[in-house]
Length: 253
Image (tube, rainbow, N blue to C red; front, side, top):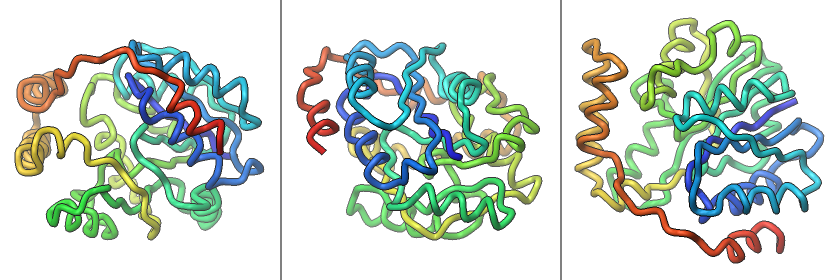
């Protein structure tokens, strides 16, 4: 059985669409629970999820956690009931029958891995970056591709390293590559390019590369976070959002 863990922070505009996608593209037979881990949203995300929980015949639960994806994902894993954990970003949409695809790989003896990724953008560089994710190279990995891992292996590693506010996905991925326990499923997950659209493709790509290189040369969690906050962090004002329209995206389906 699979437990899906989704860390969220101010995702009222997309969470209902994602939950609808997860329900429509999987079998209830294989999904143990879907756990939304909120890190302190102020845009109506929590209220929206609570309404969806009340109306869905899937087991969906909302829990709260300290802000930070590593902390949120660990908190979700702590309450998950499945023996396979599937960590998913709130703006990433896995392929049809994603649950059966994950189960098949685990049954083959592959305890961890991800899907290929396709950005929702026609920019040539993002299309190329998407294409490269079909290869098994560690440099082509990232949290946007999602992460499945058996409960046993996740506990053996110790979960996500909560010292890292950013780059936490890659820390876990590095552990899996060191153990030679990572597979890329040759099906496409669609991920949002919203940060690239907002800040510019080359600007974001340059700074992501810089973070990768900094970590390669030994930068610690605090140094990576300071660089991210200075160059990438979105300083958008979060507005109160009307939740009726996003909610209908789930209910009407």
